[in-house]
Length: 250
Image (cartoon, rainbow, N blue to C red):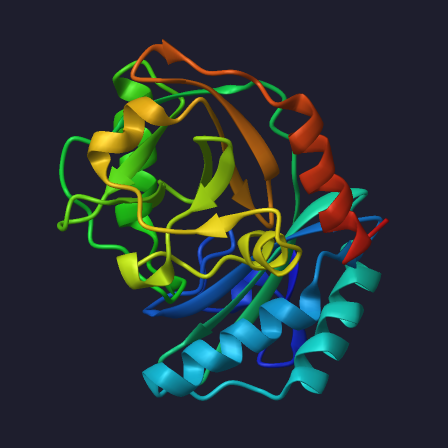
């Protein structure tokens, strides 16, 4: 598989990365859905990476170099429906991979993760601690999990942001609850479709409808929490997807 490593096209076997496209070491990353070799909200993702890099003291290329490298990568590794991952390590190396992606077609039955989870406003790797939450949920017979922070507030999903319908309003937790400032989340807030407020764990029973949202899944309907059925808000899910494409690929 061809990848971009430090702005140069190389085979993945020749760079310090796993076969699944994870850069070695530690750093930050962005994962982005692509359709017809066009990346969803690439500028927003690059801007978020620059904000995190500045706050964490990581040196990364300017937006122009990253964007041009993505174009070069798409020319060599095209995907009809794909996943672009761009990662930047603490040693000023960076990697871009473009891999096939399969849409999530099934709704999501979720549990509450049993241990408090300290979230992060930066999208960091290695990402194994978040994947472990997902795998533990699946081993327990669920599709995913909702995490609760040490203060007792809902945080997010294992690898996604969360929005819930409570008392007639769609809400999502604030970044002050250690929630990643996701791009889809940002767009929904900008368009006044979702309010921002802390959601205590005691209010989980008040959620009547919910979605996991991310730049890869866009909107993924949650059908139950701890086996309690939720209303499936198909129309709102379609509105989220439509809005996401307005800012991106369609």
